[in-house]
Length: 115
Image (cartoon, rainbow, N blue to C red):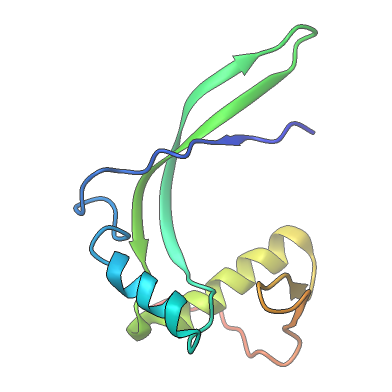
C-alpha cells in the first residue's frame, strides 16, 4: 500500500494555524516537562498533488489547510473522539503513545456524543 506524503508546509496565518499563537505555550510545555507531550488538534487537509510512477503507482501529497488546537475545555471530548476513531479504524483497544509503547484503553468510558 502506498503511503501519502505529508507536506511540511503549514498555513502562514493565525486565522488558519492555531500553532502560531500557541508557539510560546508549546515551548513552555516542552521545557517544563510537567505536561504530557501529547496534544490533540483538529486538522483540515487537502490533496495538493498526486505523483504518478512508472507501472501505475500513485502517491498523494497531503497539505494542511487549517489547524485548531484542542483546549482544556474540550480535551476530554476530543480524547474520547480520537480514541473512538482510532479503535474503529484499527480494531485495536490500545493505541501508541509518546510516553509508552501502548496506552490501555479498555477502562476508558467512551460514548458517541461530541460536544
